[in-house]
Length: 524
Image (cartoon, rainbow, N blue to C red; front, side, top):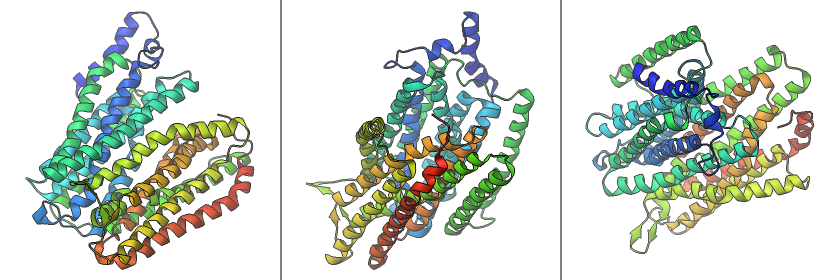
């Protein structure tokens, strides 16, 4: 990395030492951001703009790729386009694993966030230029965004954790504020990029998402020395370890760049559905092999093995949930395009605006669920983690029952050309958010509580693998929402609903044995 970037990020630590105070103390004890360290504001706005860029382009992807060439799109069929979206979203989560490793062992959190943001901005630039160059540049842009997000997203969350070395309720409140930044970005992005893409063209929407990330990274660069100081400035590895990791990363980058350039030059072709299917198998196999290693070779005691079994069970049902939830940018987005009446008076709501319903519901309902779980816990009536997972799966199943009904109304009205109220999708998103709030924070918390001490970080990676797996399955399903397949769509949604209900039922049966295996778990 350029020496000037390194020296700028290291300046605050030297300044703090010059004042004879613990380097990080004045940054963690600060309360000038609503009672929290000012560094939280830096993390909040950086993540806001990163999520703005991600959710700004995510719902546009399947629409852009399936749009006709004459309409400025790529002219792909829906199955391949949806598979590409699934691969992209899955890869974002998988990239978090090497992204965190690079930060820990080479760059440090601060520099990883910065260079991750730079890669994301370059990715958006490539997507914007693909209209002038070639569609291969569009996919180069997606690859850059994947690697950039992998370097930025996990590490900005880690920065937030480092701002609260004392832990406790203040740390939880800080993460709650940070989580709001994620959802505000996810809400605002489709509103802006959706309107621009429909009024001025696809690449205006893509470009706006890139401008957002550029604003975020410039602001981060300016505010980091003052607000974060030495927090996350240095990696944990020594100089020799940093050099080893740097060499590995450079070698991997050369290999990846060679493969990408060969594909862009037409040396070989890629079938997105086949890639998505193979990735699904590989991720599933990796999970099985990892847990096999834990049980056989990691030296776990009996209690640790039982708790690891619980994590494996939650992994499977988490993937089931996300395979339904993550159909929003594909199946449900296409339903909004083809079968939804989006007129409000003389104004037609842009297709992707409906994607903003999810973050709005998260913002509104998160405090409600926090109060509910807290109240139940105080009364000793809190539901166990598997029971909450089962409830989440049932809510997701109900959301697809809503979609079955909506699709049947389209068919009953005469088929293609008939459109139903936006409320069908709004209710679908509401039910899915209720499920998300019952599963996502519970899954994260359960993973950290149940994982053996020395494997907590790896188990968090396993949790993200379940989301990646769900995104792949969602992408494989998503391309089947098509006016030409209207007669098959009720069965498609019904199959999804039935699978979720069966999964919820199985998990309810397992609640008691799982609770027994969770006994003796470490507190916290």
